[in-house]
Figure 1: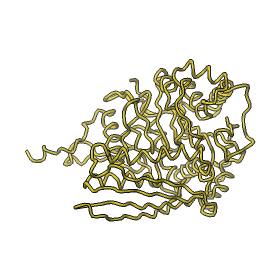
Figure 2: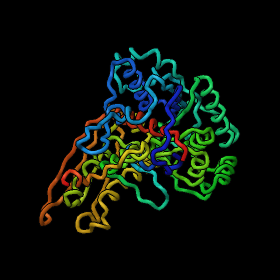
Figure 3: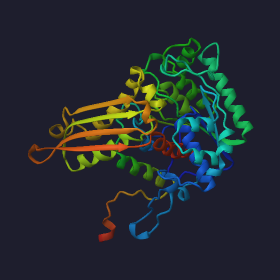
Figure 4: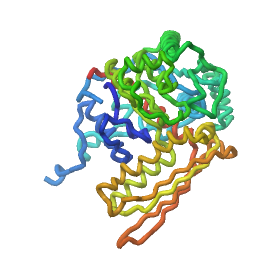
Length: 56
Length: 383
């Protein structure tokens, strides 16, 4: 990891982002982003909440 | 923020140094909390890494480990704390003075807290008008002060036998600064430090020293600090993580919980009036209009970005958003935040929501300190 860690926006009132990118303030999106980043880093499937597989 | 999928995460080994800029209510509550949890006399409530879980795979897989078991994080026992402050009080004295935690609890933690004595701070009253202290470094210019910090960090790391270190800004809100041409490149930034340029705030000197020392940096205040090209470049060049700004805790946390709900149900907003009373040092600093301006900028942007008035003009165009912070000494750290939310629903009929949040400023902030610094140092994965 290097530079701005936008996935840690969850903890901040005024999240730092790449220049030109608006910050995501919605705490629920921030949490999803944080957990998906952890899954990504650990090589786990990302969770999209689509859930079609349960109804095949 | 390049992160690599399935990165080979380095297992945390050895002691993790946590260097805190500011040893006031937030930092001492954070340190005392960790010590209390270590002793088994407190629970890390509100800490995502310590109490949160993460679902893996399908809902039917039943794989829901604790985050701290899913990702390799340092144990609380391996944390070592250090700090700078403009006052000489140890963490124990500062915590007693802050009055956030009960004295009986602090007395049980006296031994580890008393050992943490603040190093002399880089401080300039021009940037925080309402504070003044004597435990302050002197140097010919801002570059020399940064060099003093770099030397101090190296010595502190060696003495405390830390294998890695993070730095968190937990000090006051500085006056409002806009990005200036001297912030553009590392060269112009260093030249400005040598020339004692006004656009180099003390928080930037700490951040520069951290990044030069190979240490990630988290900005817990709304100060500009690492949100400038020069320090972003330095972080990337040195493969270091940075994040900020301004720990989200009380009233703004509530806003980022409530506003997405209103938007999700397509309820309109005519106005949101927020006012606070608080009597801690944070409140005193924010009583200065120049520091409040920095805070206000941080607080005001939240609703605009969540509600997206340009996408939903019928619901959110021109809503009135007012934020007030009032310094009221009798309340101490026990902040009270009131929100009056004027919403409208079907056919534009108006409704109101009132929130009265009796919160504890430093308790809420401490939770952010614990988790954010953990993720900053983890994973030490190559990009």
